[in-house]
Length: 174
Length: 174
Image 1 (tube, helix red, strand yellow):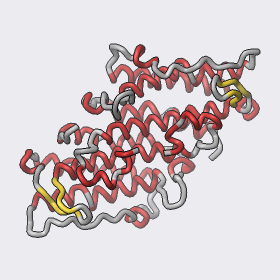
Image 2 (cartoon, one colour; image 1 turned 60 degrees about the vertical axis):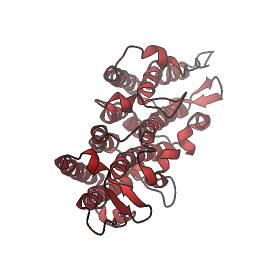
Image 3 (cartoon, one colour; image 1 turned 180 degrees about the vertical axis):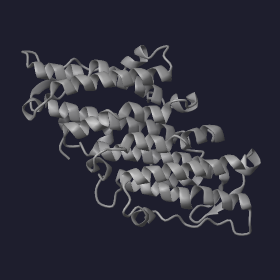
Image 4 (tube, one colour; image 1 turned 30 degrees about the vertical axis):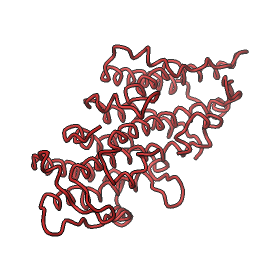
């Protein structure tokens, strides 16, 4: 499937509500659960998505659209949320993500991007040349990947509790 | 994590709204997308969850609670949704799932299950002896597995569109 701006935005605008309906009001046994050492809980994932709104998607799109001499992206800090979420409740993170995402999508809509702009290039610190279209497709896929991860992390908490049904639940061993 | 009825129900009651916020109003390019031949789209997954409300979780719990001479479960039809969803829109399926799930949870709450009841046994056609506690834990994990699948199926539609970022998106190759 090719990237389509309207269809992509349709997913991006649903992500905060999807995570809210999955997580708001759940006991910490679910929202702080992980898949083991060095893996992320739903709470940590939410902080990571928040940092992405601030430091990744829109800032990188801006670098591409500016087409300046230096189009190299600032490397993304994959551990920023451990600092930035400190002292915040899950409910606060859900609100913060929803508000930042809405702002990101207002900025994106304001650009009224056309195909020529979507083909503009920037420089990823690891991959080299990437297009704005690829960046926006990645934003969408990254959301969906973390929704999948959130559900998977939670499912795994019942890995033992399901008894023999584990054989029918591939999510337990992904 | 041990199965806890209150915490488990907290997940079960959120699933219809989670799928609604993820899927309602999306173009068919997303909701009919699959991971390839013989794999399921979000639309198909929703039909499968609906069939589970009718034929799996509560009916099997009833067999266990009855403690009759024959405690063997009726085998679950994993393809029922291809018949039963026919002619229905995604919006209809979302409504149907929400309404059946609410009814299932009313039935479950009405039983006021205690630990002794949760330890009662039934007979799974493939696994043999299973407990009510394992059945209910599986219901929760099964929901979460299919939420994860829904997001993963959608993410994979942009497998090519993300370009080199695929290397950073493990969901693309799960």
